[in-house]
Length: 327
Image 1 (cartoon, rainbow, N blue to C red):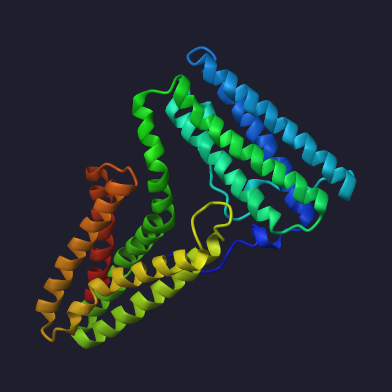
Image 2 (cartoon, rainbow, N blue to C red; image 1 turned 135 degrees about the horizontal axis):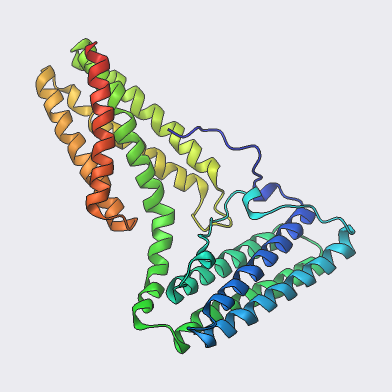
């Protein structure tokens, strides 16, 4: 299970000063300019029109960086603190597609749009944190520029993108749903279903007392739900990543964690030990199948692979609990 405590080395966006927000914006614009320049270089031979578009976007990002540096110097002086996306909670980790050859246009387009949407959300959040008129004006201009870049990323479809990639547009909402609901729910279900197997079945085979096993299962399930819920809520405030309100996401994770453990706890309300254990084992199998299906359906994991990983992990934990309880 995750630790309910955050990483003190990573800052919350809400705790950043105005100077730090501007410094982070400078870092982001520089990073995005270099990413788009890499896209342009990699796409030159196969997709020249799209390469030209990314080169223009890279130059615009560099221009935005210059605007931000000039404003920072006027307001705060020459020293710009080093603060990057990995130093602040909530940023999505972008896969380094620019290092892959040949570079797929469909994935580049989707990632470019994701980067611009994330940056636009960052500026909107930053706008709420600043009162200086010059900063607010520049941020407003940058929001408009990011809106333009989202449109440019989409316009690749009109030049060279294949019909196979059009499905990506319809997948944007699906990705948001997965980020905000499916992913935290699946995380909780996996933790609740798998991590509670050992203590519950250890208690069952150690005591052969269904009521005592039920109490242990309740404690393990509810405790894990609280811990996982807090950990998920503290991990990301959702302001930048678009993963939704942290407490809603935490509640989903916590609830699914508790349900994952309660599924094979409730059968121990049956007084007969072996009947209760048999029912609990069947429910465990159903839980593991559900996890494999969700991973295959929403996380793009082949069902056979998801089934093997989940069943193997669950079987190991299940056997560990029985062995410890029978010792």
